[in-house]
Amino acid sequence: MPEQYLAGVFIGVAAGFANGSFALPLHYGRKWQWENTWVVFSVLSQVVLPWGVAWLATPHLFAILHGSPWSFLLPGLIAGLIWGVAQVMYGLGLAMVGIAVANSVVAGMAATVGTVGPLLAYAPEKLLTRTGLVLLASLVLIVGGIYLYGKAGLRKEKETAGLAGPKPIVGGSFRTGMIICLTCGALGTAFIYGLGSSTSLLKAAAAAGTRPVFAACIAWAVTFGAGFVPNLTYCLYKMSKNRSAGALIHSGHFLRNSFLAGLMAVLWFGGVSMYGVAAGKIGRLGPSVGFGLFVSATVLSANFLGWLAGEWKGASSSTVRSFLAGMLLIVAAIVVIALGVG
Image: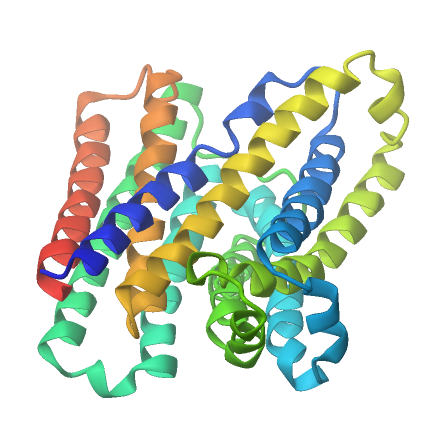
């Protein structure tokens, strides 16, 4: 098995673990509403870090951007806007159908679209080969694991709350919430194409002397810079609606909360950046294989941290067994990708 591929696998898994843990600091903030933390996180993760890293890694960054035709920038801008809208939709779907259902539906849809979509877009001839079929088999394991985890999560919520089911936070039918979650899961993978379809921009950066390992930085800057617009708009709307803008300054915890939001940004952007590196090392199938590894490790790490935090305390033994079975299927998917695709 080529060393480049193995390195890509390990980096892809590490990317998922970083991404799966990025929201953990959110639980330790004080006297800030969700939108207060999210707006600081968005500024840092979608503007400061991507553009800062791109400026450091790409010689003559702004000259490249200024000299590039719109066709070079358009893939990243469109992908970023779509991804940003999906982030907003995720919050709405979560509130309408509950955490367990929303997370499992969004993750399952993202795994499917994010694995099959790039395969069809960038290496369609591989679909019915041994490599493509192994990748599709791993996708079945991933979605099966997410289904079991989501089912167990829903049962856990009922058991620990002693209720018939989770109550929605915002109005709207369960069916509408499910449609939002399915749409969000599909659109949330758009950032993949911000990298995969920005080949002209990447070539311009490479021609300017950018090292291959940092080639994706310029594409991430454009993509997430565009994605920042919907995120900022939604946060401003929430702060206006909840009258929470003043909490940013007057809570007495600005430095503490900003540090936590910064830690979230580093983990999140670090994970996405490592995904880009992994995709580059794996080759033509990188966007597809890398995303399979990325989403699998994200689900594993997020749930492992939830387990350590006591989120499954009080659940029945059958519910815990279902949860563990789901996680084992996802581990199996990572092994299949690592050994079968390369």
